[in-house]
Image (cartoon, rainbow, N blue to C red):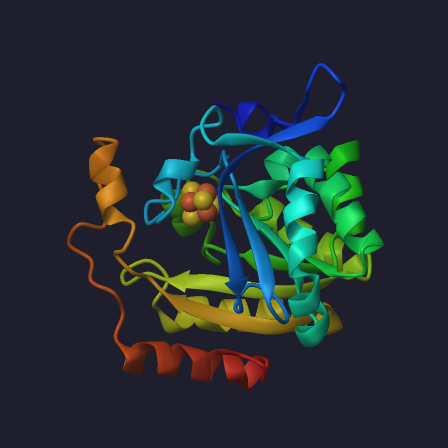
Length: 262
Ligand code: SF4
């Protein structure tokens, strides 16, 4: 597979009645970490990356999940309106890689905005700027951008793909007045070195006011059993989650560049 072929294929389809449908892995309500206030979280099926630590291995299959229409989702979302109003919350779309179902989410977000609530997109940043993805960008208030590694070779080792397109996406958001939170999973032997932290810090500075928050997330083993289920070799078998001291150390480095780091 080349970097410009199948992994960009978008998946939104329509019912015979012309309603948009999307494949959804699961839904969580009442989340508080994936965007401001209380969130209604939709995990979309399908991913273009193959991260070696993925704790949502069961989202990869583009044909899995349950079909939803925008109307069905909105009916449910609207029942949480009092919580969104009280906390400044809204809807976050995640995955898998949600941008693969851009057309559906752009319409969902349009309706969420019409109802008066905010929208967040959790993404790996591997965009290719189709008309549907541009519409999705337009309807997204805050991007939760996962930068898997600063070193291109490490990024490729972790995801199967290079990171230049991800960096380009971050710069695109900056240049178009969009807001983002930057996230990175700290995986011992892959992203736990000072050099990576300094490179991330410098990159964040280059994005200026577009970055609102930075989060370093400790690699965890909670999704490991899913790899066994799929009979896939788990490359991080011998890697343990990073210690709190290491996480604090790396956060300290990033804070030298950007204070709002957690
Ligand atoms: S981008 Fe996210 S869902 Fe996709 S493989 Fe990586 S960690 Fe898993």
